[in-house]
Length: 271
Image 1: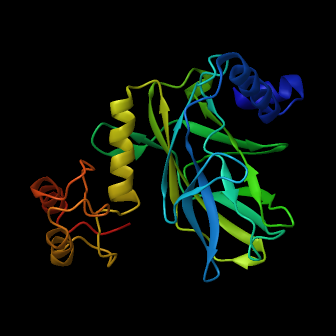
Image 2: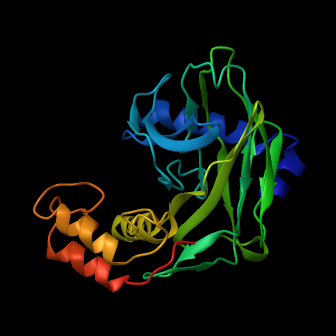
């Protein structure tokens, strides 16, 4: 679908998407605020966080590895998205820096309780550059910050159906990593963009929560690589508070429900 469109028209999908999303924005007004991916450098490595839309945006969280997106916000492009964007703020580390990305594995699909490898693919496009996911890691393409270090760009994502058909409704998770080629920065940990293709928001939220806990390993509260007694200690130490990390079910309070989630994941080893 994606390749045929480009081949027939000679116009990149990103140009088509940009025009269509701009038209939809003008017709329908501003969309709900969303979080972009914040690229920053810490001790010579790229770290992803979240940042508000805008140029520049306002940082939300310094460390974030799961980001939400909805396909089909423009009804003319039901399986496409231009969010989340990605930004860097003015700094010496990012001034004029050249970055690249990779897709670190196949597209995943949410099953309702877990994730599995999807039989669908996703195309990622930026200007004339384009890559499509496969059954393993795929190298992406370069993009650059301004001389000040400021950057605010958007990739365009297009979900491809099997055998040229329309992709099935579902929630799909795209694993990615940013790296720096000039200067040479260590790549970021894998992060995930969780795309909703026509399911209820409750399903989207459940997939996001799973990704945060088990793919980005938020269930490992101590960061030692496994769920064990040290993590129980972290929950007990935050008991009765609104401590963010230990509030595993995000109900605003660290209590028995969070301890139950931790015990249910006992022995889990971070990927």
